[in-house]
Image 1 (cartoon, rainbow, N blue to C red):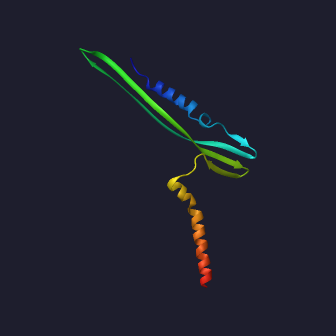
Image 2 (cartoon, helix red, strand yellow):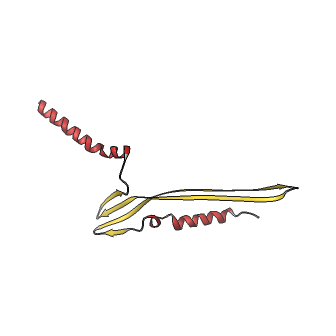
Image 3 (cartoon, one colour):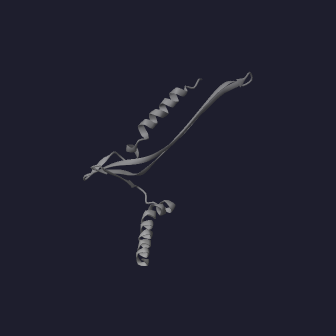
Length: 123
């Protein structure tokens, strides 16, 4: 019994082509009033395949193979456009360090405004 690696790889590729799409996870592009919304996903995949053959005079000849794979898909958010404007709207609320980093521009703006007031009063 011989293994056909090309056939196995072809079937896995066909599966990924058919299943690992945005439409499979969160749907197709849609209109919401004057906005066009396009779902965005993250895809991770892994695949492994191995085989071997051998034997001896007592046990005879043997062949074995195995394969495994996995696909993980997660909705990240939506690209939303209106005319020439495009924005990304995440599907999850930010937490931890990322949420803190999102607030840095506002905090910095308030800090600099406070310094400008101090400088103006000192002069």
